[in-house]
Length: 219
Image (cartoon, rainbow, N blue to C red; front, side, top):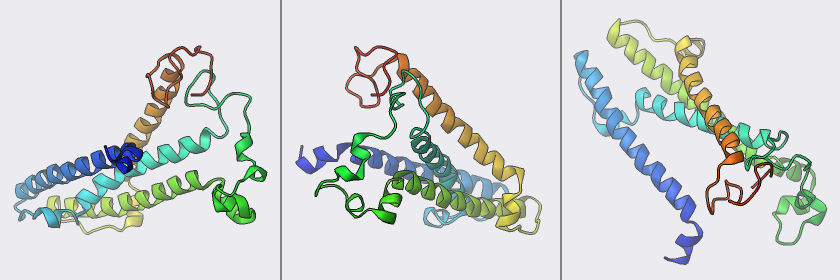
């Protein structure tokens, strides 16, 4: 295996799986959407045209939104809350790690830790900020994709006039879509936190060592 691939294999595997599943989602979603259009006597779309529809955008961003909310919230909450015995929690008596002290920065440390001030304040929270910003962008993508899909559906079914994104934000339809994803994401993380207390996965950094006591906290 080439060294660059070995050093980045986890990212390559995850993003490769993402690309494959996104492509498959677009193909199956295109087929479903064209079936719906045909039922209403409308002309089917090409695959390329389908990629610009609200139907596709809504389906993609609706899921991204929940994923990045979950990850951003998880990163932020684990900085302050603990779960005794979980591999997904920091130890109960740990506040800041010694390595978090900027006075211990070395020439190889990221530049904000050596500069201090506002760059350091932002960098100290940059992971949760980035994840929550992607959530915000995905939320908007879901909103605008969703209103486009909603308006098309209403036009085909009843010929109703289109509504604005602001109006769609106030519908039960939009929040139903969001809540059904948000609840599942936080359930999955909560289950992982609890199962990692008593269950193990050999060689995974997301698991405690196989021989670790159930009460031991942190991986």
